[in-house]
Length: 50
Figure 1 (cartoon, rainbow, N blue to C red):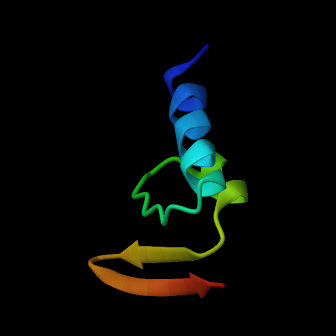
Figure 2 (tube, rainbow, N blue to C red):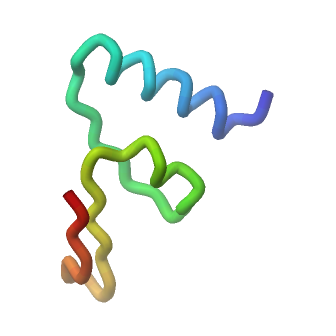
């Protein structure tokens, strides 16, 4: 199992337990599990998706 899927499994478990999770990544493959997405460019928020 890849490291990405191990990390995603842990994140999904924390979400199941009702923990708030803040994840910062350059990997766009995990966007599907996010409730909210903030995109930053040059230190500024450029896109907000809620």
